[in-house]
Length: 262
Ligand SMILES: Nc1ncnc2c1ncn2[C@@H]1O[C@H](COP(=O)(O)OP(=O)(O)OP(=O)(O)O)[C@@H](O)[C@H]1O
Ligand SMILES: [Mg+2]
Image: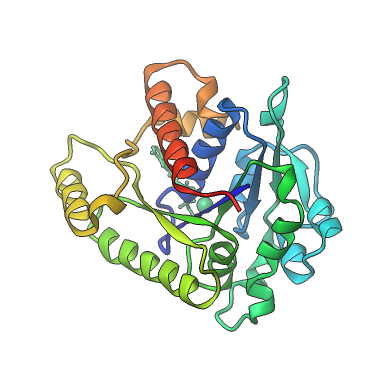
């Protein structure tokens, strides 16, 4: 089991879109995938079109890291329909907001990892969609992860935000989770015809070097269309969707190559 946290300390840059893209790639690769939605907005829960309503949310799993609470908060995604490998979602919800504090105990910070270890044999891949802050929830996600993906946009505030996120990864590794490694920075919503974007992409690459993944995700209506249809991007055959799907395949392969399963 490989656990990847998708984070950024900035809102709306594409964490959930990258999460959904990676799940779509995992589905195409036949991986048994568990998504942990740690965002009180529950966007990845919605995007993954889960079946019915869960009896609880990931908040209860953090409170009491027991296998049965994990099961109660988990729903199957309709993306698994038609004979695909299971895609399950530990659903997000408003109750999570009370965990987004900076004074969480080590017990709370380590709870998600504890419960994931209990079900390690059931999934090949776990993807954690984090909320846009460095409160308790992102720390819980990073403490549970082997690898962190930092998502950023090619904008003027992106560099400081990416730097802060990488520091947070380093901090969690030092204090709580020595296994955690940054997989890299994914630059999302790139428009190659905009000079400012080209400039910021080059700037990120020169500052962060190999940590900037070569898969840069363009701004694409196909990505929005797939999300609007609650469907995996790999299920669409137009050029924009195919190109985006290939980029997510590349990021997933990189993540799996770079991570030694525990
Ligand atoms: N590459 C892209 N091309 C087109 N639209 C995109 C792309 N990436 C993200 N979007 C759109 O931008 C909006 C914000 O993206 P998303 O919800 O993935 O960001 P987020 O970082 O998860 O946000 P939050 O911080 O609220 O969790 C969504 O409407 C999404 O469809
Ligand atoms: Mg999100």
